[in-house]
Image 1 (cartoon, rainbow, N blue to C red):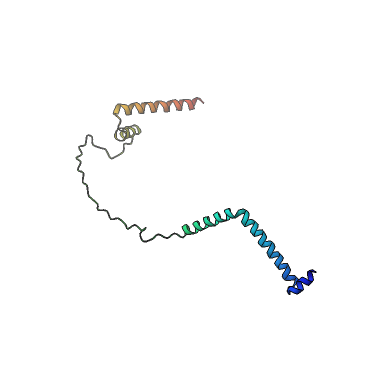
Image 2: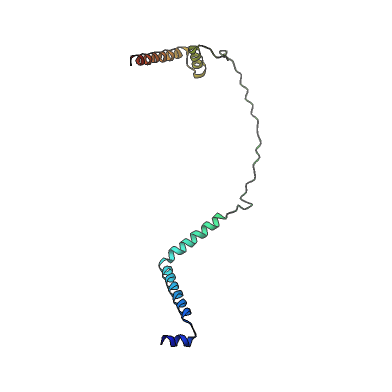
Length: 134
């Protein structure tokens, strides 16, 4: 009976097998589309958005022309009255160098700088004595 129907339609066995495979393929795709059509639509929309935004080219209106600012010259005149002359040569002694930097750069008074130096020297002596005892 099968062969009579195939003969009357004028189809070969190879054509019938191809039609069956195409039918199965269409059925599978249809099931996938029915089950997941929302995800497919959302994915297609997301892909479209990415494609549009990836090919963005600024329009002529978006290009900002460079702004040329007028520079105003402000001249502040400050009169400097030196309280102490600053020595440009560095002292050779370590204590003098420390005192020079402490007074001129750190804005400490002479007595504060001397106390810092004495504390530092005392701590160094304690460390040296500790190393000798070990």
